[in-house]
Length: 332
Image (cartoon, rainbow, N blue to C red; front, side, top):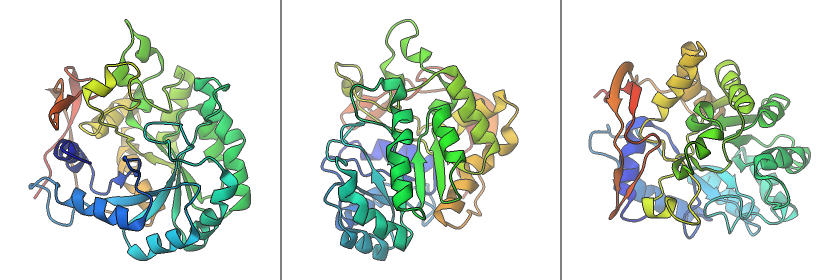
């Protein structure tokens, strides 16, 4: 993190009380010491209007071929590291230090299974011969079944599933396997990337899929307790998005709840909104349910075209457009 921290924290702090903090920085957060230092930097930048103690970052470690069982044990003892993130090397932004050999990570995964630390998975194949729209299916056909077979009690979150195949995979597993879905994958299919030209602010990994896939995601989000919100919000400066090659990632932290509300409303599923965005994830992580309430109102408001991001700017998803729902200010 650097000069862009305040803008990122402002958006996150307003919408979430217990965000998962991803470890794919440069350099990546591979040790508990690094995670705790990162946590302190985050807490120093929480907006002043957020009540003390109501914002709890859930820290994660970046899994590499060299992660040891001892690293996992230290993470557990810390009390602040809740999970370890598996990025297949080269699968997404800042994943170059990720896993290249699944055999090498099995001792660490076995220790995680023993201690109850969650494995968060970016589920995509990095085989360049696999079509980009089929890499999730490839991963959940081969790699993930192998991991679950060797560590059957490992608690797994299949992060940001994007396809009907990914949903069906999660539904077929036991209670120790769950999944997150992003706001943008609930609302959009891949056509939006190419509507009227190339739209880089809708480019993310895993990439948006078909309308059939999107509808399956919405159905799962509304009806199944195995799925909960994971924003995967990625603020990249405009100079890193509107360029060649541009970074993958959609910045949605400014209105993730409102976006989900739009998707649920369209399917008559607003009654499931609180469960999806608040209670299911806390339950799977073993966290206490919050006693604080937030109010979402049907109110039109103009989404800023951009936000300050250090000495640059970041373009939010749907920047400059009008939103139909608005999350009210946090109660004291």
